[in-house]
Length: 114
Image 1 (cartoon, rainbow, N blue to C red):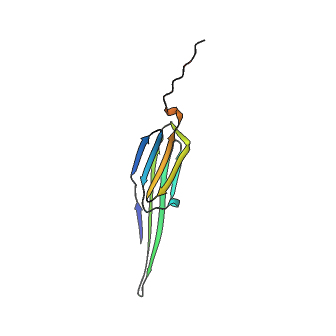
Image 2: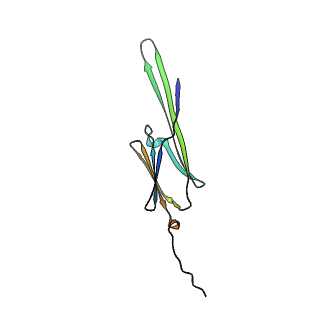
Image 3: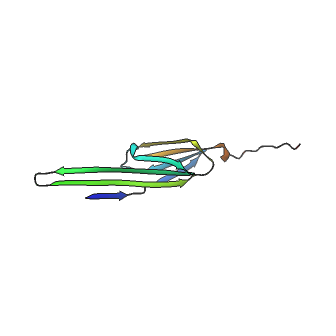
């Protein structure tokens, strides 16, 4: 018997002090189960895990498989710094930090007329 669970974790997005912080609630996974990538301006977060459980008794053998996976994607603004994206996973929570680039700040530049 195989039990397939397709879950979609909740995500909180915080925009504060020049940084986007994503907090993905994904208990039951291990750090190695995750893949975080940026492709064509989209942040893609995915994870997959599987397990096998075998129980042997005198009169029977029971073998079960389970699998769980998800994919979430978020369109990123042009004002982020791709070189400064960090992620860590601890206690069922995946934290992703994305720094904004200087393009996001309103800069004033005076242009001299010649």
